[in-house]
Structures are given as structure tokens and as C-alpha cells.
Image 1 (cartoon, rainbow, N blue to C red):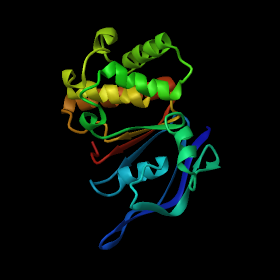
Image 2: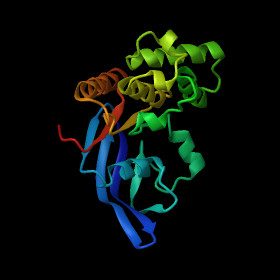
Image 3: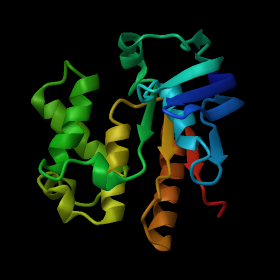
Image 4: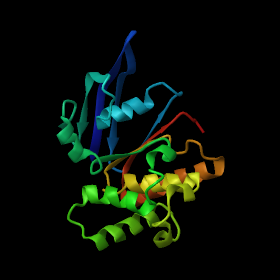
Length: 217
């Protein structure tokens, strides 16, 4: 199998007024194409910080203290923001925890997904963007995509908003998908549907997936 991601002895620290906080300590793992990796731990243990450090989305007060991050054999530990912009979306993408805050309530769902498509497919004509958005909505299980395209996030349920966030994350067909607590604030039935959908997408697109959760179930 093709190795997509390798993390070796990664440590991340946060500088606070009271001193250094060790958010991630000496973490190592590798991820191959089509593989699913689960990162499980209690709230506040550094799961999200680990994922954000790989994508270089750390807050200004945080820094990679030790270790290395390699993507497709290339060391990106010291990569600058411009270089990371070329990797985000195409190589790896992230489904963030809360779809309520990830979506803009004043912008229609279709337009928000279209924005993500345009960022990574700048040569697409308007009709191509529209068709890509409909394909993504169908991929994540949003019924009647042509009608839903013109609706706002507040017209969607929590589970449907999570599907919209997934569509945005998949806009550039990433090789690696980070799913950070993708079932947060959803009831048990919808949680199962979202996890089944993630597994189906992973199999269909052969996307390597890192699933982050505090729930052993």
C-alpha cells in the first residue's frame, strides 16, 4: 500500500501566561491509502491539536516543538503557509467539530459548497461548478440537491448540516480526510448514519480517513 502520511515523535506546545503547556507529546503513526485510523481519547487530551498541527492550522501561541511530519514522502514539518495552501484541500481536508459554526447562516448552502469547489478548481466554468456541487451533495446523501442548493443552513437539521460540511471537505477530492468528532451534538441514530456515510465515502473514493473521537462506542 502507498504510504500517505507519517508522523514521528510529534510534540506540540502552547505558550501561555503561566508557562508552556504540552498539548501533544511524542506521537507517532503512519497512514496508508484507503486506510482508516481512529484517534480516541478524553476531551482536552490533544486530539484536535494533533490534527491541526499536521495541517498547520495551529493558533499563534502554539508551535511544533519536536518531531516530523511527512506527506507522500515529503517532509512538511517546516513548510510555510504558501506551501501548505497547496496541500490543504487537495492532499488533506478536515471536517470540523461543529457544523453550526462551520457554516455561515446568511449564505445559501449551494454557494458555500461552490466556494470550496472554486478554490481548488479555478478553471471551472459556472455550469461545471454547479454540477460539481450537486454531485457532492448527492455523494454525502443530501436528497433533492437542486432544491437544497438554494436553502440556508438554518433550514437544515443538525445531521444534514454535517453532511454539508462533509461536502465542503470533499470538494477537492482529498487523499486524507480528518473527521474531528463528526457526530458531535447529534442523536444516536444520526450519529450512526454519519459514520456509515463516512465509511461508504472512504470506500468509494479510497480516501484515507483519520477519525477523531472521545466516544469508544
